[in-house]
Length: 87
Image (tube, rainbow, N blue to C red; front, side):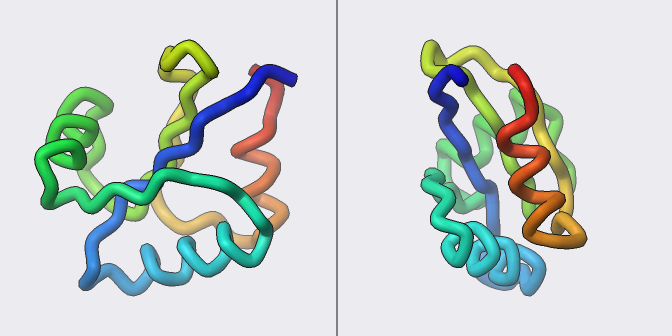
């Protein structure tokens, strides 16, 4: 499988964002955590039409956008299936 970069967009006040953070950490998923209120968060949200959080963005190892998921996955299995599905 190709290497991927996982980006999680969040806000400090967002309860589902905190749950997703724990879910990803508990499953040893490496990710970049970006606050939607920062310049980088605003730019990513705009570029990828993110209107709700949490959001997960998947990029290939060359930085090409592959897919996104908005909202909290129902289970850790749903999370890993989304992240690691065939590119």
